[in-house]
Length: 322
Image 1 (cartoon, rainbow, N blue to C red):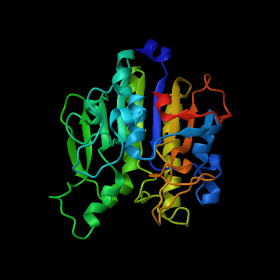
Image 2 (image 1 turned 30 degrees about the horizontal axis):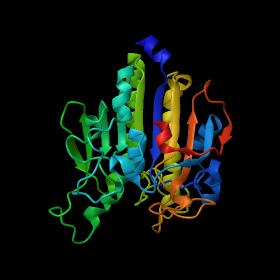
Image 3 (image 1 turned 90 degrees about the horizontal axis):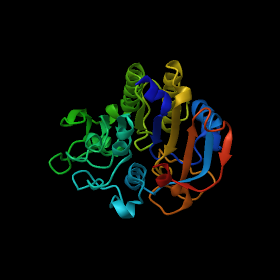
Image 4 (image 1 turned 90 degrees about the vertical axis):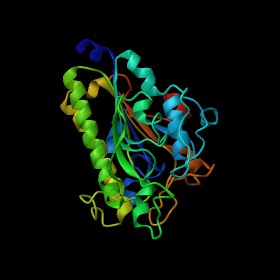
């Protein structure tokens, strides 16, 4: 196993939710947005920063394109749909997680899936060895605090957990307080998984689709009030800290040189107040066909393989990552 890990890079892909092009310091935001992002900026400086990275205009089609390498018009995963309605990628698509175990990798998904919310369509049904997170999306955390909400019409949202070959389990309701905690939990489980695979000497692919900056953009209680300019900036600072936690975990285990660490966003910024984001110089928000919906941050670090400090404006699409 040790030789297998030496020959094959580990892969960690962190996918932010509704993070606009203009939010991070390395894309012209950061301090100017009231939220410094030094850890993500450092990640960009240590590898390649893409300034013309393009995705789809909504969560589901981007995640489908990332997982299958095919445009969503081909997979049928065209748009986010409400809880209780059929959703997800069709069973005959081959996901990244189904492709990579043949090369000896351990796989895990910690975060927002949004590509199927029924048995047979969870991450652990699609190639991942383990999963902890939410099957759909973060605005469902507002259900339980909405007057007139009827769980017999739209099902309660749950944080879930599963292992391959076993039924997925509902752990607890995904309410507003759980929404604040979840990214810390996702990163904690990611770090534990990295440690386990490092000890076993096995290469790994861990997909970390965090929940920030999707509305309601609420920070963990430890970060609430940190910036003094509101929940959105506090959540940005938390997100930056979480990315730094993963980078530190790799370094502490001597894995930084053997790991491709990627960070990107699934679509352009939020448009709802008080959580409105920015696409920087580009027009539009997610759910539009404008450049601000489709051009988002993306950076990749792989010491010794990707030169540090590189910036490219070459057109790259999310399907290319497959």
